[in-house]
Image (cartoon, helix red, strand yellow):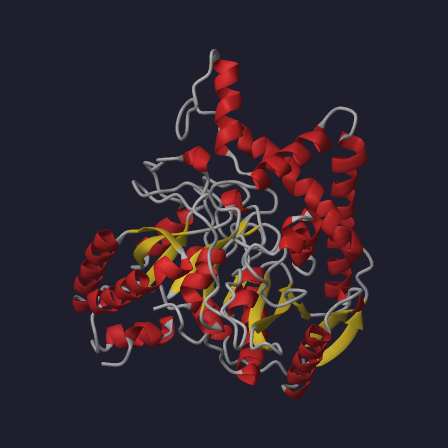
Length: 494
């Protein structure tokens, strides 16, 4: 039998239907890979091997009786931000120690209803705050990619670093992830995987630990564009428990794969050419433009004048919402409790010990910008900037642009414990420079692997789409994937 962990979701789905192997065999293969790799890569914080076997056996029974769901028997990893009933759900934070929710998130409920199998919970930046997966209480996730001739550990990006590493290192077939300012697309670019952040409201946020409620959105990370389309179809739904989820029919995203892009208009925003941008990123961008031209798309220059304000505005809006959302963690009802002489001291002790440095930093920033004397100067102004950013995109769509092509990240993956980035948080925040506009405008964006840098590390290109037009992103993304070819890290970890 071929190595089952090398299959795509689409291939495994067909193999299971043809009875070439069972879901249990497929699941055991991934459990074996996790056991061999997790010590080195730290992608999983909890492995639910027995639960996975039980779910796989149930899937095999459904496959045998012809009642298979869309993801029947497919083993997936779940980011630790998604509530999973009676299973570790801690947002990789000390303050949620021991929390196992008595309920299931809507997104994971949708996946289980379609027959998917849960392998375990994936590592992430604490409360999804980070661009390198180094703020996790459970330690950093390691990127399965290394520079040619180097043994240096690299970050997988954040906050969904565990999801990206697990997919890239074949520790699951696909993974759930979330994106507040780039947390699906940046890790996907750093690990040579495909990650899509859907339109705000496409996937329910119910049962997903909140970071910034007007920006957070769930989405998948997978090996291929087709696999990400398959996963998003199952993840997306309207949900009466989340009033921001939108009641628009979820299309068959897979049907968009392979459609011609002839006649589509692709916008290229000059404002994404940042000062000091590496030549390799510009070259990759030009290559992507040429691939789309060769496929018959029309490429046009567009203006997005408010792009330069997106990052500072994002780092006002997101921490403001975080400071409000994280006020509920106080040591009273669940999670960590550090005693004090009275309830106020217990609150203070619990939050001081329970939250990591980056989370504390963002809570402080958020509390400051929402405080009486600064609300108008910071938070209100940032919301106005957000409206202008959205208008830039609206004008592009009104002028007939179907999608926008940009780089996904300003560089390839960097080293774990990179001192230049750790000593200056703003430098770390700059990793989100190409991705935050999409969250601020509530739009869908996909990162597709497009090439390797001079050190042999993967780089991604980003496509941005109209609201609820993920199908066009899959359609155009497939062209990039076909032109670029596939990229796999050399196995060094087991």
